[in-house]
Every structure is written in C-alpha cells, then in structure tokens.
Length: 279
Image 1 (cartoon, rainbow, N blue to C red):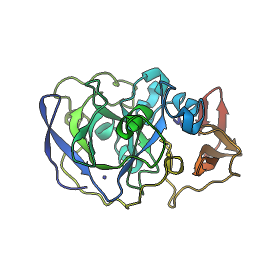
Image 2: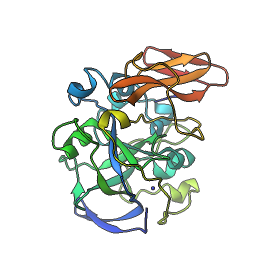
Image 3: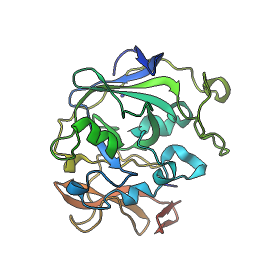
Image 4: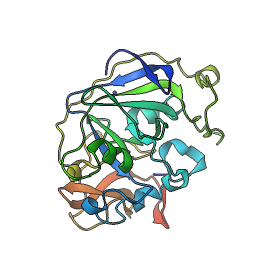
C-alpha cells in the first residue's frame, strides 16, 4: 500500500471547447478543503511553516506503480475526490478534468489556463460535502488568505475529458492524454453516463477544523475518522505506525492536531524517509 458526487449531466465551455460533464456534484454546504502545497508558500501563517511537507512527499493514489509524489509532479492542479468512486474505478476517474464553480455560479480557475485534475482520493469526501484541493486553489478562491471559514462553492463537475492518462496496472500511462482519449474503449470500463450520488451536507467550519487528507489505497472506515492519539502531539501531515495500525496526523479541534486511523495493515506497517509501507 502506498499513501499517499449531484444532478444531471451538463454541457459547459472550458478552454474554448464544449465539454460534457460526466457527473455534477452540488450539495448544501459544499466547500473546499486544503491538503497539500507544493510551493510551500501558502497558509504558513495559519498552519505553521512546513505544514504540508508530509503530504507533499507521498505518492498520490492515481499514480499507481509510478509512485511519484506530489512534489515530483509539481502542480497545483490536482484535486482529490470521493474515495469510494476513485478507488472502485481508477481508470474511469483518474486524470479527468474538473470544473469548480463559485457560489455565484461563475467558474473558478487557477489563472494559468490549466484545468483541475483528479489525481488523488479523499476519504473525508465520502461522507462530507467537500472537495480537497491545493493550497494555491484554496487561497485563490478565498482572495489570498487561509484564515476564516472554508470557501463555499456551488458545484463541481467531473468532466468527460481526460487531461492525463490513468496509470494502468502494468505501470503504463500517466502522461498527457491525447485528444479524444477514452480508456473505456480498451479497458472494459462502462461508457461515461451522467449519474447521481447522495452527499451528506455538512455546514462550513473554520479552516483548521476541516482540513482533510487525501488517503490512497485504504479501506474506508464505516464511521468517520476520529483521533486515536492525544491532541497536539504530532505535526500535521506526518505518518506513523502504531503496531500494524497506520495513522496520519490531522487537525482535530481548531489548531490542535491528533493521530487519525487510516488502515489496519495485514502484515507490515513501516514509515521511513517519507515512504509508507502498509501491506
């Protein structure tokens, strides 16, 4: 193991092209959370210097056997979505473009003419109305700050267009997707159709309380994660093994941190030099 939503389909304009939405996610209280910062320049005044180093140095779920870390990829475009979707069908979701819409209905972009891309899975997004993004995106939507409540959005759309090819089981893929790329034609994946999912609405909360971590290749707990260690005893984004139990340090109450359950490893749990081994 390597660590690392709701209405009918729409048609929208993006990058001067008409792109169909595979899925549209809209729910009361939908907002952004932040989990990485490859620039190490954002949110340090709120979360402390180096707050994202642990996450930045771990592979994303969608990178599969290539094991590139967020730092290796070096972009702010990556978003993490509902883990139950991505983990069940990575070749269908990994690499798809995502369009994010502000509360007023206008589209939000990074300003570099590059789209947001699904390249990670988010356990907290399964039961909460959130989308996990980079610090650059988070700060951009909030107007240049990390302070205060999490930025609300009206919806986000998973587009029927790939920006990167999904990484296949044999380790191939992962590069820029050619025009018209569709793994469904060769991988036996059902063709893209609009679908509807129920999202449990949660009201926006102060930023430090709702930062979520994108977790990859894990068994999603049947109940919400809860701290399994004392608050304030770890650095945000750090990993540890407690016996065969893999844990990550997350914000649990205000600025306080605590260890959260990730997965019970069958035989081995090791964390060393930024690498997580749970198998």
